[in-house]
Amino acid sequence: MKKTTGMDRATTRNWRPATRAIRGGTWRSEHGETSEALFLTSGYTYDDAQTVADRFAGEAEGMTYSRLQNPTVAMLEERIALLEGAEACRAQASGMAAMTAALLCQLSTGDHVVAARAAFGSCRWLVDNLLPRFGIETSVIDSADNTQWEAAIRPNTKVFFFESPANPTLDIVDLQFVCDLAKAHGITTVVDNAFASPALQRPLEFGADVVAYSATKLMDGQGRVLAGAVCGSEEFITETLLPFQRNTGPNLAPFNAWVVLKGLETLSLRAHKQSEQAVALGRFLEPRVEQAGGRMLHPGLPSHPRHNLALVQMDATGPIFAFDVGTRERAFAILDALELIDISNNIGDARSLLCHPASTTHASMGEEARAEMGVTEGLLRINVGLEDIADLTEDLDRALAASGI
Ligand SMILES: *Cc1c(COP(=O)(O)O)cnc(C)c1O
Image 1 (cartoon, rainbow, N blue to C red):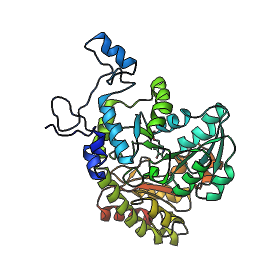
Image 2 (tube, rainbow, N blue to C red; image 1 turned 180 degrees about the horizontal axis):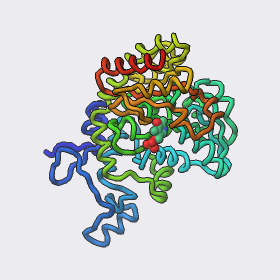
Image 3 (spheres, rainbow, N blue to C red; image 1 turned 120 degrees about the horizontal axis):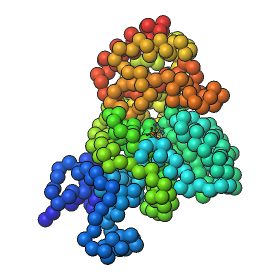
Image 4 (cartoon, rainbow, N blue to C red; image 1 turned 60 degrees about the vertical axis):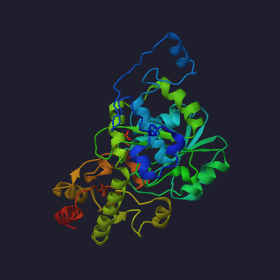
């Protein structure tokens, strides 16, 4: 008997998460390769004219063109859907391609979007600049305040769009409350789950409709490729997202899909270990930062206003946290004194990386928007990697001392 492949849904849906991460979506060719095959092809050939006619008519299964389907990309899509607990998933060229597709595929002129004000800089750009250009109204709110979600709803509100934890201030959204509220008003929730990944948080379990990813972050996990994904119901993906994606083309390259497939095999191990290290490093830093008059923004520490909620919603609180050291001079002094940790704006990487959001990821949005979302001049954001925690602690200890903390 032929062993089941990871594309056999009846079987794979019974697998537990660790098995799904390794074997889900594996679609072996006639060669029986162990590792997933990389299909670097834009097109496909057919044995006869009727076969291709049937495929184009949607009456027969099979590939027709890599903007529509590609076997390596399909393997990644199936694996992400399995990890997320989603009916369907489509991979995207990057996280921003995923956010743009998830929003534009369902919005029209006259619709209204309520979005979290604490967000990745480019996500805010979509909300503040792109959507209004097409006559889509947007409101930006404090996503950690439940009453603001309710107050922002209008008769034409079509979408709620937010991250949790949010970049870079680590705001936590009450997923159950916001998803229930959206359902009661016929609003679609689009959750950017990049800071958590499906290994740590699955928003669909709380009633979210669409989960969008930068797979560049924890899913790849080794800082190699840009990638994204949109997950949702079969109906949403097939009827709303696919027509948009197939005709606008934000597709993920097969090579990048293959890299992320390999990353998913170790995602859970990395995400949990990095979360543990982030809590340990946060505990070390907190008294030092507070003594210097700064503040910690870390959902894994009891000082975070939504620490308990984070523990309910997430399996672990993730590798990223932020801390405010008061001034840009001090923040830069810390960055410049690092010997091990790199100055870098990426996150989710196995390497520890430290960045100053106000002068990098959130520089283009302007001072006023930064102030409103709490991106202060002294704020630093760290991605805690997989290096030995003692080496990371020593490096930060030295850097803090060099800055006078
Ligand atoms: C990085 C990131 C994005 C954008 O993803 P890219 O892959 O860089 O396009 C979107 N949202 C969040 C929360 C991110 O961290």
